[in-house]
Length: 355
Image (cartoon, rainbow, N blue to C red):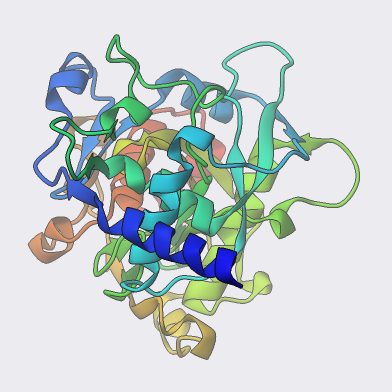
């Protein structure tokens, strides 16, 4: 008991010596400026990320195999002390629980037969690593930061770190843009207590990929797992039944959310069988009320050639544009790009709804 008491006091004393400095003004422009002209950078009022175009093209063109890495994520020993203290302080401020999720332990392959490797990750791992990267860690008595958050995201050459060699949990974010039978897009108003995008407008369903999204038996495809998770989130947040979803949902994009430690984020499109009025009559599930403030439906402009606009131009209401979450901005940008492909069959069905 004496030894345990001394250890607890030592840890508390060490924690008081650590200060986390949030880089709120950091828009990473100095590192991402070369990508601005290509249209691969997606910025919202509070966040920034990169569309991984080669990976996105392959996701839409061919099936990518996936595998499960049974080795769970473990915080690197060089970060453990800071991560534990950071997590303890975050838990006091947000609504969160240590749920089971899946992370990416490899990059999405752009060619070949190598699978995308998924691994078990706890939500607290994401908080204590990916969210920690938004801060610089200072310690009393040290003139320079003992940990620079930028170094967890970018290499010394200013390139995004490969997921294979990243020290972050890199929980897989998934979302879908769901369109009603009368052509309206469902949007979710998140509560201010959500840790991911508090108080912002999210896609029709968004969250983290979970082990239950992996089908039992047989070969896995990355698209299959992503769609299972995205539509699960849609059903949970918008209180939609599986029978309300049409066949043929598709993954349309992949990005790295730099403002969340460059975590992997996938987006999809889902078509629904019911009208917006029918769908919005349903109440938010009791279990989701802590995360979902409200659900609404908006009509996107009927644009003959979407190549002339950016993703946020699809939202007519300025209030929507100023409160958009990064996953929603990613999805809308990838949707604009996908609709330029005249051979995209799901796009043809969606275009008919938007007229």
